[in-house]
Length: 263
Image (cartoon, rainbow, N blue to C red):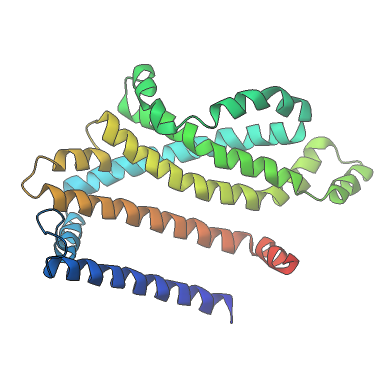
């Protein structure tokens, strides 16, 4: 079975799963198993979600969330990758900073939103700061892990030909670590989206998907709008993850082939 047909089958299975869940939810509402007052019919939620796709105000909120998400993710890569290379190439730096990293890593990112509110008066800056803190861990850890996977023989070969540390880093370490960094960025993208919406929900603001959900609570069809907006948030997460996965497969197919061959 080719990789292409396998991907198509996964898409088909995913579509069947979503359709099956929709049918079960609709059936539960129609038969009275779930009270439509407590939870709206699946068809009503989907109809509302489709309507939101043409809602200018909602699209502006989506753009606001994605703007913070993109800036936060970009800053995460620009900060976490160099720090990861620094820790991965200089053992004494890693040893010195490991206690600090181990102390900070277990702290729930959502718990830092009140602190971020005190430090940043601008809501956009606050969201970006929280996103960077939460999303940089997978990028940092994957960068350090990727450096450990670099073939030492390749580095020694370049050194024997007179290449300096920066040339070895650029020609061997960075290309070998790139697939691991890409995986870290893909994981960080999902975390960044979660934190962007969570910050909007907890801290409020003038725009964003989280803000839309908060304001929808006062509308007559509050539950439908809330669930519909949540569906869009999930759909954005699925789309972004799929795009990052596709990019990984296209850019680093040689790494996937080597990994599968090792198995």
